[in-house]
Image 1 (cartoon, rainbow, N blue to C red):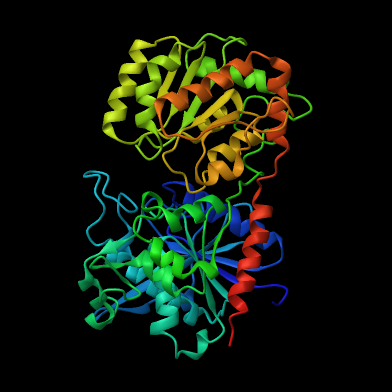
Image 2 (tube, one colour):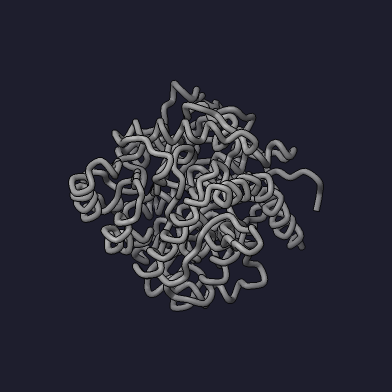
Length: 495
């Protein structure tokens, strides 16, 4: 493999321009580190209404105006704008097609809560537009790194539709799946919008999945190399339908080129030593600031300060997948322990109603925040003592990585990336960074929380666990090195 690579990152969302979840954080964190390593990294993403053009100085690119993209029999014209990822030299290209992307939501209509009915057409245009933009730009990447179903057709177009286009003769693709539950499955008639006929849709074909056209399967089948976001999750999705959502056999067919690479965090943002959004910075050698942040968090939530009572926190989407059903069933018993509970998140209406009741029932002991608040996220990470992540499954997760960095001890379900990144504390050896439970049940969740709360009472032991976690390096640097190895595997397929 040659030393420095040209890498195009294809994301449907990139923070801070647009974000619905962890994918947006990956879109900003990984490219910056690859750029710092000396690679020529660029990003392409849709320009949504939420993207603040003036704040982030999006500029027109003359040669990237009025690019023709064929959607079915109709020729659409896209414009591509350019900006830089904040605090970096990573160039970002924005595909501007207002009828598709200038909407109130990114994937779903906020009014109905349902996915947009034309998401297939929107992301066919996006995937096609990626390749047309490269041709217009005359920039030939070594690797196109695509993320999730929204860009899953890009490897398919690259390998099948554009296989005879000389411009792409030395360009390869890596496809990263962040969550196999989200597959981008559409009516098979959408192949006509791709410019193809029905011959591409038949049982067992590279884009057919249970009678539908699957953008995710297209990426898995046609990318040169495929990965997901932790080693444990890579194993799980090949062997259990609960994790692979029917893709197990397809993934097993790619097992020689299917890998797990855990996420990282941007430690220029998520780091108590430099975090400008917390009241008091602190280090592993001087944890006094941790206490001050706990005081500030409790004050923010209208709760009395106590060093004796641990703050158990959750920052999560309020869904069954995140284990909220088990939390709900365990909540009263958990509150019989000597704890505060702080929640930040939004999601299913049933959980909003439940936590509205919790707010009244446990007034003076809980802080319930049914919204999304970046500043409060930082304060919770810095001010909480215990961080609870009881997910039914978790491909990777970022909140436990941030918690470790902030000395907030995680209690997690032993699944996916949680199992790969949190090591169970062993009182005999003093090693370990948190508390894990295996069975997805009320009983085992409560047992793990109780162990953590009891250990919290032993200040010396608790400090050791905190520092064990803070010493772990889950920055993007380690993950980026692993991705460079996968790029090398892509490029080595030449010829």
